[in-house]
Image (cartoon, rainbow, N blue to C red; front, side):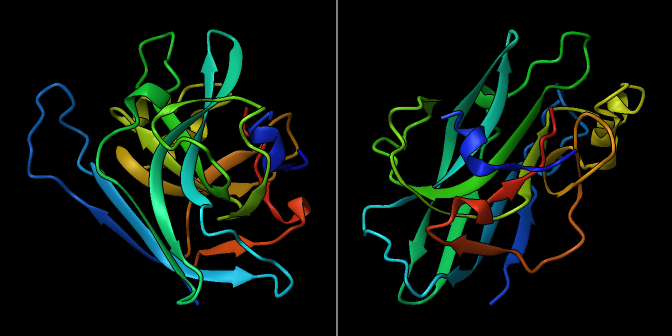
Length: 209
């Protein structure tokens, strides 16, 4: 399946990855250990590109709300253009941005990191009209959150790839397939980069659903 550009998500040097574990013992979801994630790294910038100082680095989650897909903003980071670095921390599950399982499997969140002219960075459904300029993205990389035991997804006909991830927060990279949809697989690298460009074709993500 051909991967999609980030513009369709709205409908609308290397990175160091650190996953922190909480000491909080939640009896309702005992398999979840990775309750916070901090991602920080470097920038790859088109030399002809100018990023306005009010551009915001946010996580956009791809949500299926009762058959209607929409994008949800949850999570904000920062970019230092002069230093060539960025950082973003999520210290709580994306409860309002989860895909709710209809058959009792753990709920799932899938988000991507983008740099755009977001007028409001509070958690909310993102409309087509509010995003007028996209400046960058951590290409083909997703933040995966599974609210329970990922092994419960192993028997699902299309989303069985979720079983390969850790419970709680994890990071995936897109993989093309010969089927209708692409998949996410656990990331095998720690060298992610925030790509900043004025060419939207540079921002590619898997068409996973």
